[in-house]
Amino acid sequence: MIPHPDWPHQQLDIGHLRATGVAAVPFRSVVLKVHSRCNLSCDYCYVYEMADQGWQRQPFTMSRDVVAAAVRRIAEHARVHDLDSMQVVLHGGEPLLAGASFIEDLAQRVRRALPARTRAEFTMQTNATRLDRPLLEMLARNDIRVGVSVDGGQEANDRHRRYPSGQGSYESVARACELLGSADFRQIFGGLLCTVSLENDPVATYQALAALGPPQIDFLLPHGTWTAPPPYRAPDASTPYADWLLRAFRCWTQDPKPRPSVRMFDAIIAMLFGESTHAATVGLAPSAVVVIDTDGAIKQVDALYAAYDGAADTGLSVLTDDLDAALDHPTTVATQMGLLALSDQCQACRVRDVCGGGYYPHRYRAGEGFRNPSVYCPDLLALIMAIRDHVAAEVRRLVPSPPGGTTA
Ligand code: SF4
Image (cartoon, rainbow, N blue to C red; front, side, top):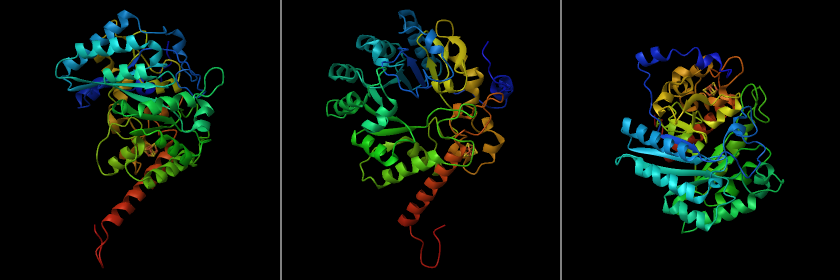
């Protein structure tokens, strides 16, 4: 029996929420765990190194029956909700271990199954160590955008992202990024995903990532909770992660354009101007992501592996259930109800609408569940306030106050 916490699992009255206007938001992004193992052995990996060890029970690759059921469920969900687009994220483990023909066949089957009005947007998140020209040609042929996980330059990346032998992965990743950034494949270069490590210099990290030529950089805070805090995140008012990110932010803002988009910074700036974004880690936008695991299980996002064993489980499977069945799961509802899901402290917070309580998995505390501020609360507050001050100064610089008055 999975030890789900009271909030949201027992305490949410989903029937009442639905009756009072909290509508289910259809899934727009389906993460397919096409292969459950990885050829790297990164020491911070949330799949293999955290509380949930369910990966050990997973088959290596999706079976033919699981693929057929997943394709059918994705198409059915798009049809039932009349979706104009559906993002399919090929994920793992390391998805390239599933093989080129498996990936090509899967992409083609999903495209054939989707209704005519639904545009399929394929992305793959890979460690890129196996990415070569023939694989990139297959991905380009099937219009599959590629996101690469890399933590900076050689020293920064190889601090954590290593092969089981202990050898660093940077050289093969940099080679793949060079190919990906070439004229032949640039159109499928999605961006870089960098897990923040305080041991790495933020300016050197940003510059090394930008030098790889990505259209976007995504900084990911290491997963952790109040019960199992991230490295160096003491339960006090210190702001080590904001300090790190703000040094990268200043370097980014001084980088001449064209420069890569930095997802977290762009999302915060957009929300400061009142725009809505779909960043999962900040803001109040409802989550519209669901995961299909290698054995066909319908799950919540992987980052919940940081909370407790089984935290991502819904008890549903594409072999027996449609994706709609997951819309009324307590975790789905909790991540779609915006403000109503926030703790009292977050509700009263001055950056509430931009922060949104941070990433849902980071709010967990054993015995209480997920109705808490983020374990990164001091960092998020400091980061958002500093970016707000920077934006305000830029606005003042561009729109100077008239003599003797203000622009307000
Ligand atoms: S800064 Fe802290 S209190 Fe404010 S919304 Fe974010 S997590 Fe909640």
